[in-house]
Length: 114
Image 1 (cartoon, helix red, strand yellow):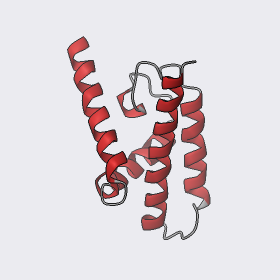
Image 2 (tube, rainbow, N blue to C red):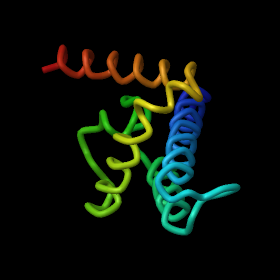
Image 3 (cartoon, rainbow, N blue to C red):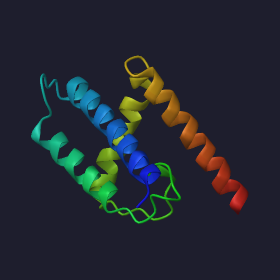
């Protein structure tokens, strides 16, 4: 496994961690850590990322053709992303902009492949 794949995996995990932490602080009013529900979601998402066979060809899970999350977890992560995505720009601007750019670029690439 190449270094670039591992760095993509780590960037994805870092973005997930930031978004879940932000969501937990704002929605569940947790201070100093994650609640049990958000911690379970984070562990689940990291586990899915670690086992992803498509890491070479995708940027983020939202751009993947195969959704390996269970329906309940997919809904929970979608809620986290919808809440945290627009707001995280104020707290982690570089990471948020890089995430938005990579997502846009990946969607354009997928559209051109069709």
